Image (cartoon, rainbow, N blue to C red; front, side):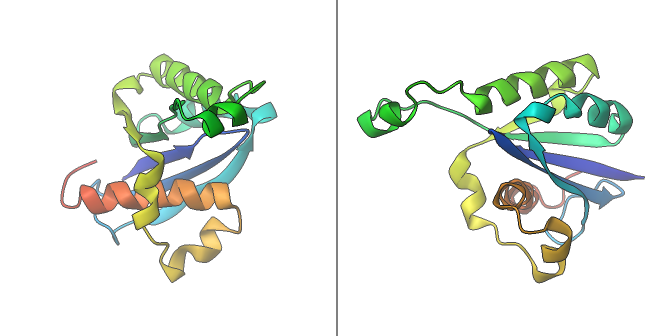
Length: 151
């Protein structure tokens, strides 16, 4: 059975990408794209069904970390924000806890994904969404850092 690495790029529109590792061994090229989609904020409870359906296969849940920095321009950009990224992170954490997956959560910094490229053979499976591409890159970055380990 394949093990899944589920990477989530949270926001008003959230990118979700699940990579399937046959046998559970992590490698940068030893996986297929299992799921690649955008989840809108209005559909934010989607994670419950996904985590329930795949709870025995999920080995890692990657979440992009959210931090509010004290830089004036950043703070001004957040005025009146309802912080959808933070709310999605909370929802994912709650459902992960509900389905016994909380210990599978791993956070990455937003910049971590920038060094991971999308191989040509996965372009079609990922589609055109920048949010899904970012989620994929988070997963690939994790695979590159953890090659040879079991998921």
